[in-house]
Amino acid sequence: MTIITIARLEKAINDCRRVHPPVDYVLGPDLRKLATIWGEMIARKQKELDIGAQSFDHQEVLFKWLGAAAGHTDVRVDDSATLQVCPIRQDPDDECEVCQ
Image (cartoon, rainbow, N blue to C red; front, side, top):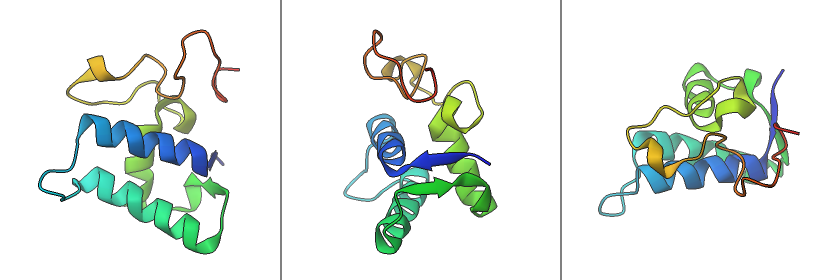
């Protein structure tokens, strides 16, 4: 069971938005799915999410954008220069919740 926080999901949304920004105010498919997951968490007042309890489509997009936090080593995107080796860590000197 992999549990993530809403803050970690928000980081994934921001990473996705940075790599694939909306075009003419239209969200791309990954960003739309992440936003849907986030909205459901907000509506249910959840602070944590069990990835294993999500639909296959939602699991797939979460695994893609959560990287190491979801059991994968990297986020596969066309422009890897915009992301760091650890997609969770902002500051290279600071450890994220997974790298600790």
